[in-house]
Image 1: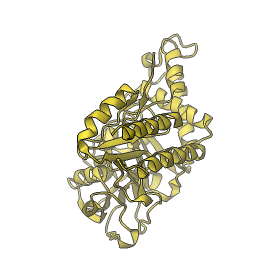
Image 2: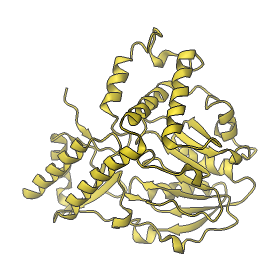
Image 3: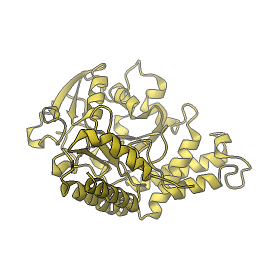
Image 4: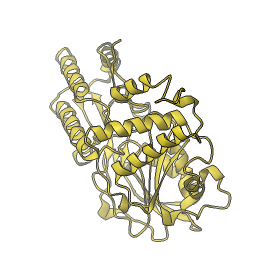
Length: 359
C-alpha cells in the first residue's frame, strides 16, 4: 500500500494514527464484542465514547461552562438556516459580513427568514481580502453579527475576532476550527463541519452560549431547535455513532500533539513554507492580500492556465492529490489542515519547483 498526500478541501486527510486505530478496533471495540458501528447509542460503551469526545472537545476549545456543545447533522449548510431559526428571537434583521463563497451562501439562506443587513463585503475586490473593520456598518437592530473565519474556496482567513457592537457574534469556523487558539467567550455561537480538521463528514459541532437557547421560532423543526438538542445531549434522534467515534479519535490525537497551541505552530510553519515558494516563483501566484491569507487553504494559479491540466495530472502521478481549485474559481488549491504532515507540504513544494524548472 502506498498512501498519497491528500490536499482535498474536504472531506480531507485524517491522521494515519487515527485510521490505524480505527482499523484495529473495527471488529471489536474494547471488550464489547462488537464494532462501534453496531452499538446502541444508548448503550454504556457508546455513552462512554460520546462523553469522552465531548469532554476532549471542550478542553481543546477551552469552552466556558456557560456554553453548550452540540454535535449535529446536515453539515454547516444546515446551520445557515438553523441560526436565524434559533437566534432571531423576534427580531427581523441580522448583520452579515461577506468575505467569500461560504459567507455568501449563509447570507442567501438567512434572507429566507429575515432581512439581511450587509455589514461589510469584499465582493468588489473579488474576495481577496478582509474588509477593514473600521468601515463596517453593523445594524444595532440586528439579532446577531455573522462572519466566516476562513473561506475555504477563496483562501481568505481572519487573524482577529471582530468587534460585534454588543451583538451576539456568530462564526462559521468549519475550515479552521482547532487550528489555532480561539477565545470562545467572545462569541455567541460557533459552528463547524467536522470534515476539515475534526473527522469525517457527517458531524457538525455547535458551541452556543446558554442565554441564546430557548428562543427558537415556533415553526422550528425539533431537530433544528438548539435547546431541545442540548436537553437531549445531541441525541434527539440517533446520531452518526461511528462518525462521533472517529471525531473522538482525532481529538485524542490532537491532544497527543500538544493541543491547539502546539498545532498552530505547525500550521504556521507549513503555510509560511508554501506561500514563500509561491511568492518566489515566476510561474505561480496567489491573489489574496498577504495580511489575510489562509493557513488552511492556499489557492494559487499558474501564469499560463493551459498548463493546469498537465500540472494536476503530474501531481497525481507524484502522489499529490486533491489540488484542483474549486469549480467556481478554478486554478489550484492546497488544503493543509491539521492532519497534513509537514512532509506533505515539502513534497508539494519540491514538485512545484521541478514543474516550474521544466516549464
